[in-house]
Image 1: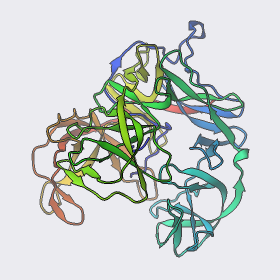
Image 2: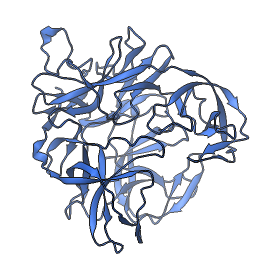
Image 3: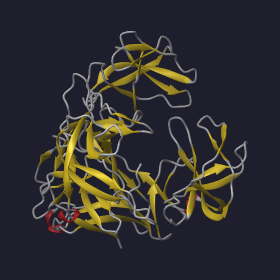
Image 4: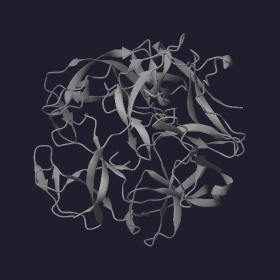
Length: 485
């Protein structure tokens, strides 16, 4: 769908948007086989492609990732390769760049942090990048390290860009190419549904199966359930073929249009917000009615409708009538004897689709399995992120605060219960530690920020909040990981 860093190792593959949700009774992961309820909700390993799990000490289990038992390595179903097929591709922590201005001489590029020693990746994955989608193209074993003074990259339009220099990169020859046919091909099932929304599963020929998304039979499109604020209990299943309409065809900014590079497929739907809507309001959804003239064109600056020049490489699409997206409710399970609860999207006609987020019922906050520097996996709450500001104009008196998104004439969102602060790794280590604090009261004083020069920091419509003392991570539930036999 269109319109849609610190280094810290997170165990779970992906997480969906958080939020306060209704608690319901649901099947716990330790449901007995005699109950007639599948505790894994259709997920199962194959003879070669295995599921991996996060196992909490209270008995809750959550899907994690994939393991190729034949190649003896982790993998993940990346987007379709250039041959149109999806393969469970081994982890690659590098990219492929070029040493010549014609972008024909390939070399592997891997980020190097001089403050810590890291093991170079086994594989280097070359992507074919596009404006609207990118695809894995070639997978290579890493070869010997080489010296490269400058490098080039292939642009989205196929041209070769550069030269570039970067002192924090290491370079490697490309070894033997790994054929994608030696990997496990992953396909998707027909939607399993007796109602409007049905689950779509990843599958492999050896028997693996895992829920991956939903299908809306009324709109005839795959979709992903979303909520649009941290307090929302209800949301919609957003079509995967929807693109955000960020431009307008009239001077009042009331007729939204979608602009896409001419190489992109026409969208099926557009999601948009009227100019008087708040950013956390649910978007509206409309079907694409056909192409639109590229002129006149406007964008909403936040305060006024402003003329802009259309891109000559874009095709513009007009919106037809609004359509009704499938409504979903996001709920926490209430499995007996479990502190960590699974989270599901549900509908009135029986859908029970698992989210990747988790809920710590003792702390009253959603959490995410996080690997700490000592290797311990803890389900730590997430929400806000802590930044360092200063009390004085010389930027010497540090103060940690949390900044919460806000808008003029819109209700200020409730602050998250907890916020994370990332601690710089110890010398020789690459592992960031996490410090967790409860979010306190709004901060009303003046603060300064140092972005090269110490100056008053103006959060605009955003709000700053104070934080409480650090919370002991031992208060949270720990976990281990496992691979199905």
